[in-house]
Image 1: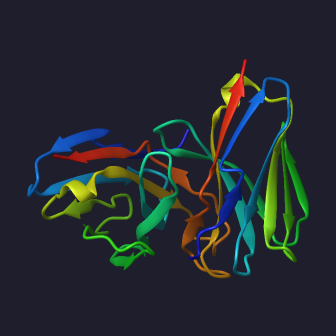
Image 2: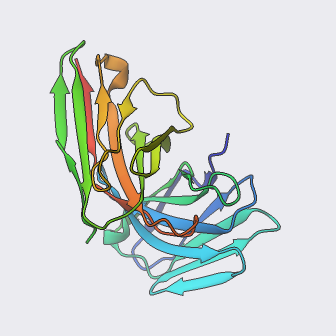
Length: 112
Length: 114
């Protein structure tokens, strides 16, 4: 399968804690993206990291990319109840392919 | 906020009916996608388009068809709906800058075939 694998599948934490989600993929890629999906809604783009970058920050989000291990992680610091959602990694299907495929997602619950 | 719209948001329809799910974007994006997603599950690419008159099947086999006659419009049609088609359908678009561009998603159409 060209789909990515994410872990954990589900994560439950308390407000204020940090949440870390991991994504692994199989092919060579030139970028990897993270998206958020609130229940039953469309996806919203969070951050994009290129293959020549190792780490990227956006507000409370920190993304890392290890192309040698074909893996990426998304860290949400100081989580809030409003961060409760599913988080997906996405990447080109094959190298520079135009097709964007998604991982299986991590369902994050942040308890007040 | 993304300017990509899907209609209807919810649709309940009987088996055997023909349906068209609408997707329109006002951003002038060349690339458009249709994904199928069961509740709480991963997204599967079922159709994509690089531009007008360009459509291709995605990774997940689907009995639906698509057309791209205008840049802004990418409708998906099911000629004869079946209960197995019950799912959420998400439309997305992105700029044609090689493969490095974020995708913008519509709110989705939740289809139930009874």
